[in-house]
Image 1 (cartoon, rainbow, N blue to C red):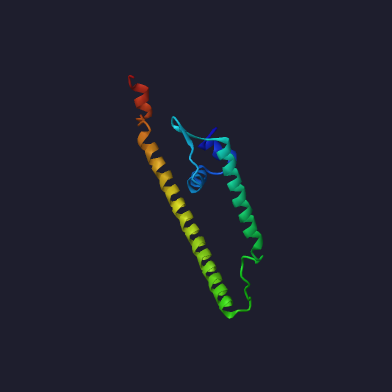
Image 2 (image 1 turned 30 degrees about the horizontal axis):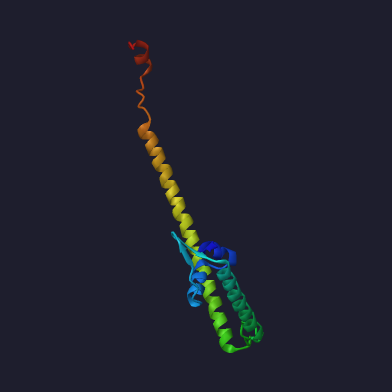
Length: 144
């Protein structure tokens, strides 16, 4: 007997799908404590149900006509040409706008860097100790 989680791993389906299959086919697991266990016969029944549904899916997939998913487009269509040219113009405009924004950003960054450098020099001036300059005679004749 396997738990719901282990059965879903064994059958390689999600736990949600397994619970939906149990409900749809009225298969009742055996409760044991907090777990719900499925017997070997119930697991075999679920496995056969999954195999049947897989075969049906493959059957439907093989009967569909093999068309490409993209529709055929006439490249000479004037509407298409007009749409493409307008989109190309938009792209060109957006690229120019992006380049201008990059240029503006570089200028702003350079301005910020120069302000930061000025602030650093100013801070160094404020933090540097004030050295009192004495003249030659003061140094020679002062007592210190």
